[in-house]
Image (tube, rainbow, N blue to C red):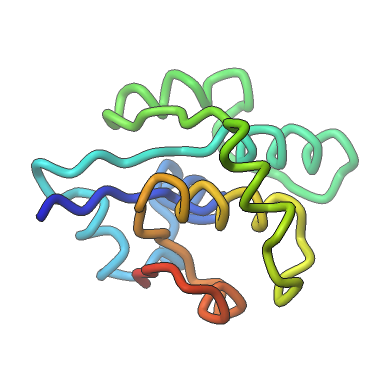
Length: 129
């Protein structure tokens, strides 16, 4: 069975920047052949908003993020109506709206989330870290 991944926002940033905070298991999972790695459009919104309000600084200029995503063979995952249906009934174990979108996308698309966020474990999703 083919397992595809959805990178959490911090995972995307740490992978692109070569940050040591990214676990070896996470890095190896992302680099596996015959795997499709997705980045939620919600993560790009989250990065843009946090940079704009001064809550995030990244090494790679934001305008180059799309290029880095495609250089690494990642696919951008849009938010679908099905994702919003899942969010509308998702338990409130996790209140961060961006993480809730990522959780719903993982559920809707049968994706394994690569994230160190332990709050995600409360949901019925696959997670690697």
